Length: 165
Image 1 (spheres, rainbow, N blue to C red):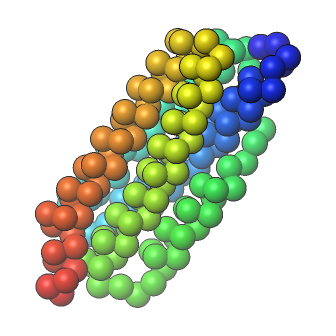
Image 2 (image 1 turned 90 degrees about the vertical axis):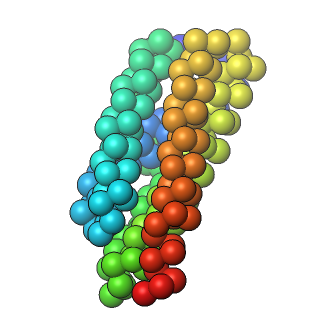
């Protein structure tokens, strides 16, 4: 991809950041699933792991289409969010309270991703990269769905049990 446009350069930087973030999430999700006591939450993390792997494949497609290498950048924002999740897992919490904390940590991750994918999609649209924008929108929709599922899980099961504990 020719780097003549500063917005294109920004988009490439954003995509590499997202790629790093997704790969960090792939490493963190199995630990979160293992730490969760709620079977529903465990399943939600396991399903999101599979979805995240597909999202990385989609980013690889975008990299090929733009003729760019997606590696070489470390997403410090995601690194910090995952570190916060690790702190929650290391605390001595009741199972229900830990699950509530894990959901909060996961939603912070989702909101970060929603912001990142939304920005990248907007820039792809501005650059007339319609296929890229559609692929980013597909992932953005998935991230929004995951966030809604986590909210439903928190409201229906986890936080209620944590309050009652």
